[in-house]
Image (cartoon, rainbow, N blue to C red; front, side):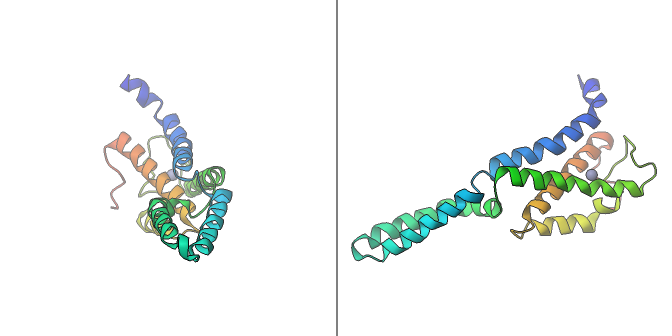
Length: 166
Ligand SMILES: [Zn+2]
């Protein structure tokens, strides 16, 4: 069983590069885009109604519940829908363009992390920072997932997360 897994390591790694972003997109980016637009409209109308004396108390209670519910989703939902999230995260696989600088370009048993220039400590730190801003969050998230998967692959092959630089 384990031998078979080892034999398919490369393919499994590649598959994970697609499946993990897909899962993240499906789980965390479901309620973005158009739906969140409608949502804020609803908030605004709530705000107008809440100015009427008789309903003020009730509405403010609803609104505070609303804010509590929205808080955990905020981090992920700042951007957009599932398809957009998945596409952008998939595009971050272009970070592997740095493999072109290596000789040979592809080597099955090579650890990427700490070897290829865009897979080293400073770029990885930047990818993490990108996650902090709504506009760059998906790119950052895609890149961080990519680095984690590459590190996992390294761990599988060599029993270490990265080549000695860390
Ligand atoms: Zn990579």
